[in-house]
Length: 257
View (cartoon, rainbow, N blue to C red):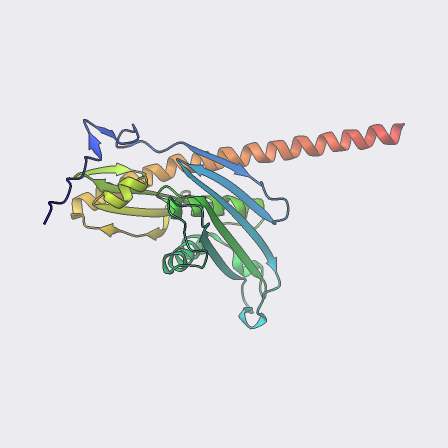
């Protein structure tokens, strides 16, 4: 029986396979409001991940028996496009997608003031267009922005990031190769102003000390992504305000004529 090929190192001389240092995030870009027909939307590129998030609501709930008298009914749908992975994915929702839909809802719901919208529904759709590891964290981060874009009041933004263990070392923000070939992965979602953790998972095996180190590193990563969230929202709102002023000036000129 042939011997199994030895796996190449994922980190060598302090440098990972994609050129990052252990504590480096991948490059992140966030756009607010790319979809005109959604109540709120966001697009995120996190490394090679490309993800759209859309929010609809508050609106009438279908089916109606799901409506709740004291708060909005909140649901999330996480879905990976068939072309999002290297091998074509079946379009039907997989068991993992159903699990991550629930994970996303659990991470976001503590930040929502659902009691302000009784007997209504709020729906979040996350569509992964291209996957490269860490899609649950990127999706949660984008969905939080989309909720703000929809004008839904939040106690705080929700931001997510992961740390993990590869080749015995704790690193931040695992890509697909590191996620698949590494030793462990710790995704975390947090509400930064209060410090409340709304999601904490672990896949793999770590010692207690390693888990503590990974959690602290993931929380530090969340702080960095939180700054990017605020920057993207501020940029979008400034552009919207400038656009509104331009329209008002244009209307005024037409009236004068």
